[in-house]
Image (cartoon, rainbow, N blue to C red; front, side):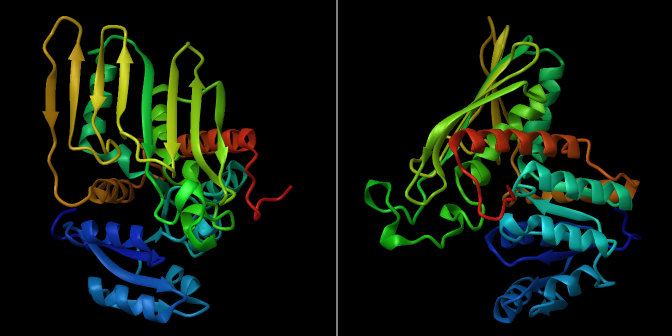
Length: 345
């Protein structure tokens, strides 16, 4: 945005950790302004507003509707728990606001289709906040893959897992705690929905829609998936494996293998600062992309660019990709026997 343009005014629904992390990066970004926060809990809303210097606060039972209709908000960021994403995104779209919705986009593909249809019918911008796709590392990796620098990409190995803090000994819930978001069926928790979506989304970005998905894993004492592996097969014979866990800390790396080399994105690849290019017969090359903060500014910049140019979707995270990933997640959960209580029969 130029200096003569008004800053993009953000309204945030939800005061959780992801909202705060995005807020830290966006608050330092030129051309952007954190404008309003909404929470049913007045205390949480007030603390969030004070922390980031937000001029407008909406609290109480009608807080979300009030923020959605706030004339001083240009964009709504939905950062509530997974099971509320559909409701709150539709609320913002109905009020005429473009929306950035935190991942996972919705609880299932059927909900996602409803939300996508609403955005397209209203002609409003909508994007899922899969922040990994917007990092300079992944933009450069994709460029080099298209250029054929490792030959034809054929396989991907990717993982993202950690041990959830409220799992006690022997993977049992500590003190019977079923209220934590990660391990709650009523909040659409589990490894796949929280972090497994990252390796699945990266595979989708590179290979497209799979023709087959096979998941294996276990449902823990929590009732949600805690240890899962997913194998994805594609029309032209490519294969991707995505592993995720709430029981163990995984290496958290991604490797893309081609017919004449490979790309390695090291630990915490979902918010990367470097990658290593291995080309057959050549020395490995390391490429570094340092940045400030956690990197949420990159998806914020994409949102601003889309709105400025009148685009209704991002070419980096288009809605067809969101729908594709949701279908994979549905398939994997069905194979594991996991159905959330808010899902209709």
